[in-house]
Length: 138
Image (cartoon, rainbow, N blue to C red; front, side, top):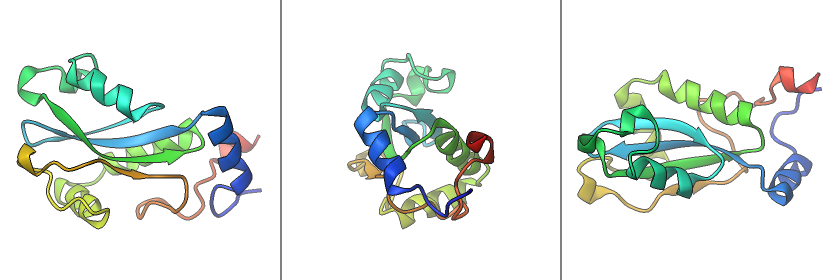
């Protein structure tokens, strides 16, 4: 049976097992945004900054990058679904989403602030209330 939100039991298990999955947004030095999936936001940001992340962030002109936002999920499929949905947004919609999360500006790099980390509680505006993946229930 699908639930409206991740249950406290799912959240507790994910935290205990340290198997959280994250959707994240990077600001790149060329005024572009990059969106991805990871299980460790700090390690992933460092990898992008070393040029060892995604191909997109490898060129020198895109680095350094700064992780503006990350959101934790209890499953990989939920995090990747959030990533996919965010990638469908226009640049303006992405900036509006980030602004709603408290990130006033994504450019210039001098405007970069600490990352906004959203834990497991709550939902994303672009995600339906029912984020349970039917394929995971079988």
